[in-house]
Amino acid sequence: MENNPEYFAEREEFYKYFDNVIVPSVQEMESRRKKYLFWFLAICSLVIAWIVLLITGQMPFAYKGEYGIFICVLVLGVCAPMLMYYKQSKENILPVLIGYFGNFTYLFRPDISESAIQAGRIMKKYDKLSTDDGFEGTYDEIPVKIIEYTRFEHKKRRKNDMDVMVYQPQGHGIIFSAKMNKNFQGQTIVVKDKGILNKLARYKGLMRVGLESPEFEKAYEVYSDNQIEARFILTPVMLEYMMELKKIFPKTEFSFFNNQLQVNIEMKENFFECSSFFRSIINKKRIEKIFKQFYLLFSIVKTLHLNEKKLL
Image 1 (cartoon, rainbow, N blue to C red):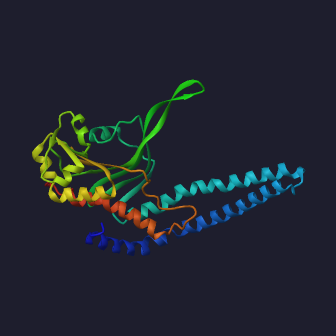
Image 2 (image 1 turned 60 degrees about the vertical axis):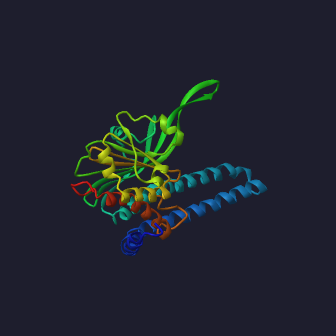
Image 3 (image 1 turned 135 degrees about the vertical axis):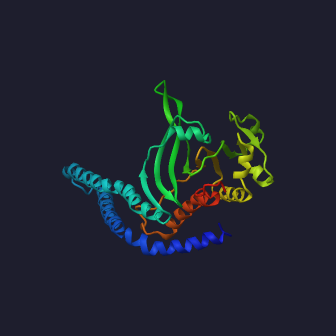
């Protein structure tokens, strides 16, 4: 992105949107955060004072229980809105932020289509998927869905001299899917190059596709049941964008099938973290980071010209 003039021009437009739309729309939530923070600090002060009095023995024994119950009630009373703030802040700011790109709805822990995941063939095996933030709407006349997920596997653990099965996190990421107004004749998937383990890869009905890009071949392996269409999709421009995306998100894989593009981006950090209880919700640096995440995702649509009836 450092040498992308289109990104810098888009970012300047977003700065105007930030000042004129985002800041005014979240002022009320920022006032609420400050109020919650004030009471949180006040309760912390009372708790610290209580602990000091207990340690120094300055509190009469008769009042220890009553004072402790009072403190517990206050803590619970303050923690409840604090816990709600995290969800409320996202529900307030994320729809406005993504509104810069199009007409979208914010989804908190949305359902995810198991059939679509299986059809894409780029998600690693799992026993359970848990979702966090999601967005569904239209970008450049294309229906788009973005879902943040955590992947779990059943693992056996020893507890109290017994074997118990538990769900253990095995990966975190984003599923980006877009529906086109045209159909692919076959399926083409672009997956991470696994070196000597490539020979063990098995994608039933798909054959390896060779491309004239040594740099791309070092990073990815391409499989398809339609060699001509695969090369038609993976133009030099598209390969360049995929390599640029890989610099930001190293574990990114793509699937083109039916009338869909599905992108799986695995990473350790959480996406779309726009606010913190101890920081202003009007945090330009943090919001710009999310803008860049959205920009990269939506650039897939622009690069592929998915809104055109004729592929590329």
